[in-house]
Image (cartoon, rainbow, N blue to C red):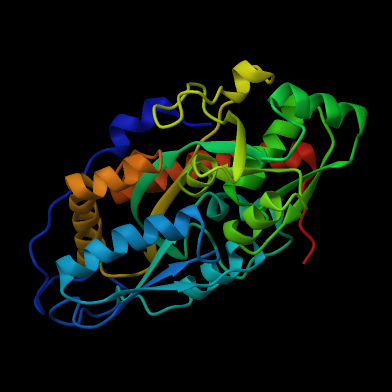
Length: 333
């Protein structure tokens, strides 16, 4: 659930002068190569190409590439609900050349998986919360379900027969669906994929009944007639999809949750580099051309300080840990 009272604190940003070889270092940080960046920056995405996180990473990454005069190259590393990418970034050199765009999975995977080869707090340096956005409950256009009520009626009459696709265990669509199941008291079967694109493909084809698609990737599929939207996950309707009712008003009172994307770096990255990436990202997010592209995807642009992102991560862990425990959701690898 989006914690509205944090929006003000999340919106702050810090400016930074250009980095030089004489920049001060925090104890234990890696040395800075002067000037930074002077080579390709790798942007790691934890899911396959074609999903919302991939799209937003490419939009922001392309503009940062222009700003820095160095290529920002997207590297998709799907698998294990984002854990493969998280472990890769956690083990990367803390020199600013491995940037990580991730989502809610980094906050919930410690509760879902028996063990992790990284720590979601101590192994990463928060940079900035990029954006918040709803998820869409969508079905194939040929589906007999034309409303949330239709889907719920069928699920209650046929326990364990309705399937839902997700980009992987612990992803925001997965958590949105689990919250939906819990609040609506229905039994639905999780079908995890290695990214949003293959999950959507099977929903479009009718091989899976539904999915909670992130707005950035789901809304275009609704607009071009490939999927039908039954409901939106936030408490209020969204301007980019005004005709789509909220799930709360459509059959599950009180339902309200949002997805988020954020930049992280490996822990012990020099604070000067963290602040530069944060400040430059906030600048990019405020540019009219970038804002217009993100507005079309239905996101709420944030651009937070590193400290506010750290607080947001803690809030998400505190929120979802008890939900996962109460539902006894476990992932066996």
